[in-house]
Length: 202
Length: 202
Image (cartoon, rainbow over all chains, first blue to last red):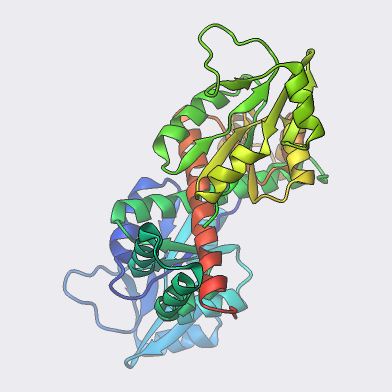
């Protein structure tokens, strides 16, 4: 039974790191994808834990060899996700969390055939706004929709994601993200027993 | 924002009732569907909580009026799920758990257009077996598949369900079922903001 990539993106300041830390410690059989980078290690960063730190020639050789699931150059430094370590962990049955920006996620969605789900973590504004608008019950539906539409513009990149987790409170958001992973497992388990083992379904 | 039906079926003896009780108390905005029946109330059962207790003429009038999402006659008694109370709760944004057998779930799947997900809770045998087989690493894949195939025969009715939750431990199963509900909400939220508010996606 092979694992799934859990691609997680969020606008900065959304609390993604805190949420991921909670989920990583709460959910079993979950691994975190460690990126390669050419930038200098910051104080306290550990090679192989925070990043794999490599030099530019090495990184460019890896690009040429097609070793990356996705990579990008940001502020004169390369960042990338190597394919092979992911494959190994997936084969062992781990689900792997990838903390990755919208562009990287788009590349993976377009080019990779690894099983993956895409989760977008959003700041609470939209949800808060909706709750407030509906709660007071004075605006009509058209007005509510219009207001939320404006607010949603900034979250437009979440369109391509299957799941939207709103970080109203870190505990809630972590619970939902964990839930998504559990649900995905319950779903693949179904596929497994339904198709591979029992034979063709109804 | 309208709710979703959470259709839950399980072979008897699977621990479904205990799991559902946990999930109902853990997850907010969740309601439980109360069935109608013509059987006599048992000691301690409360009308409107355990069942809606009605007489046969009343039940048959409801059938004729098309008031049931699904109904069946079992051991000379009618059992059924009335549509209107569900609609009202869904409109208020509640997700509604329906504890229902495989036949009832099939009728809903076929005839209802209400948003619904279908969850099958299975006894742990299959999962235990798989773990054991893979754990010792002596069988080849073909043998493992064959063994699991046999074991899975009895679970064949789960084919039509989107999710399979294996009740290895009640706490785990309850966590997974809660997770499925959270995930489903994160998914509809996505649909909502992605389609209704932001406009057409990519």
